[in-house]
Image (cartoon, rainbow, N blue to C red; front, side, top):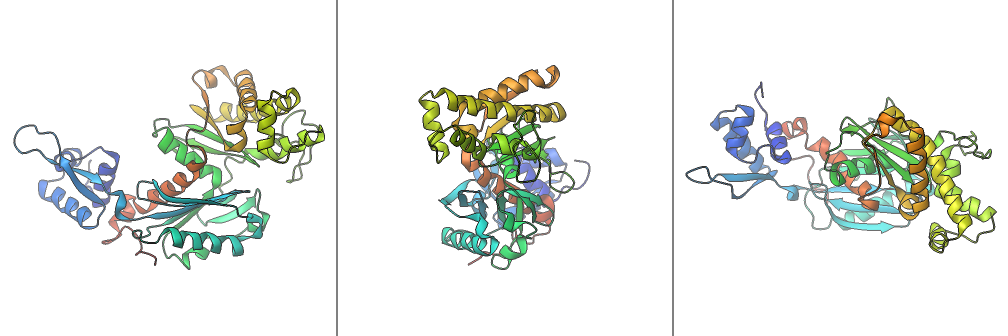
Length: 391
């Protein structure tokens, strides 16, 4: 490094594995031995790193290895969904320590839902370490810098709500809020793919349809947080279905789980849930499989445009519908490879989610940790990672 490396930057080197001994830090940064010792001592004192077993020797006494200590604090997180909400507490590596899934009607609004989520956090936090930050994923477009929800997909009563101050009244720590699909995309990218791919498109197909875009290794939110809102891109020959946004034949209105249930009921099928659809698919019901595959074709039509525009290395399909229905995935593949450019699909992979439903919780934690463990935050944080423990 060409300038004096800070304590926060040394922590980043240790977390990434680029430097795991004091000697490594000196070689990578050019810092003197006393300067390295000072920064390591500070990180040890603050509980951010620990000294591990002895490392390999090159002659003489083997060096002690340094590693990040994920037990130095916790991150409460929640991923709100239309039908169920996942609530958890994670350590400083993003690993889920405690988790519970609850049925919450998000349409009851933030005045009801947020206190319930915070009550559950307090129960899960019993006996845990200091809370360093809180992460929340919501099924809405989010103006990320302000934590304000806009254009909520399934919870209109939340539109225009600034969430962080509400939570911070009870938990005085940094509170970050993002679109639910964005945090899932972050979790898939960092954990399932080990950040090996710089460009990933995650498409969630559930009650509604949305996408999260990883571009150049980071989440792409756009100017106001609206990037990835593919649900309201219209498809051809959708039959004139009126979408809740007021337009016709949006992919959300013809290919989501809600749309599949509606179309099957119109054909006389007795389906009350996606599990009923799964049973018909497994039984080989031809008409059900045709409806599901057509939904996949419409979805593939929209995703193919995104593939041409963004050129991702992988398209990851997640959410209840994508995880349950192979005919839908087949329909998506069919259209993407037919309609996207040859160069964009030359090495393109189309895969189902590797992490499944837990990706959103992990993504929420990583979103918070990227902030509170950034070099700037660590260098300005005194002797703590962030705020004191919330009792």
